[in-house]
Image (cartoon, rainbow, N blue to C red; front, top):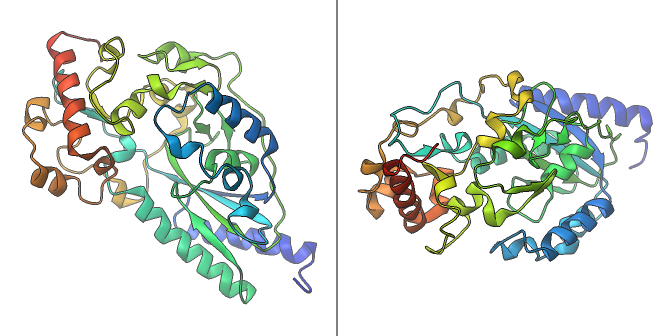
Length: 323
């Protein structure tokens, strides 16, 4: 871009981050749009071991997944943002209450974040007098955690979630991939150290080694992505009363002592989402399911999968399985 020198780039980057904060994002970082060579090798090894389970889409569009320039022609920068969703509310209702992951207590984050990212893109477009790019929120082959790590927003924890020193890990990720050159922020060190709390706490031993998760054993995968009733019998007791997602590895992470309440009102818990009895959930029909989870991430499981999860949770509750 003519006249877009290093000083102008730095100034724009500062203004961009200020605008991201004004829009409600909790952090914003920048990385250079280039091929993710190291991450590509790790992804290939993970796929080769079958750790993606039935998520065949993880193996598709590999080139686009590891190179943003295959998604946005002429891409030069990746702008990553974090959006805190933590709610200072605990699961209630006793041993028979179904547990839903905190990220799904409120409105669908895809819609909330896309709205804000579109506004951030529009601001950037106006500021530059035209910019080519796209916004992404877990909706295309983009390795969002890798880009957030490269932009200095955190490091990849041993549970494979991104950890931020000021926020912990209860946040969503999103990106703008653009053709404007911006100064990259660079990665930060890994601060997990010798801690293994997430590995030790995982009820189904899904974290098979530090930084490697076998989705086939992960409660979040089993309750959301996995289709059908063929969940292995040996994994079912470990699922406890989780009926959508799981927060165990994040709940035990020492870095989440820095978590704080989300400012976004649309992430607030919907009525009944933290304390509904499993015997009530099992009575849901399709109309009630659609009504209760309209514009909610929970609808991803579909009614059949949700009721399967509730049946497993009821069995565990009746057996007194540890949750």
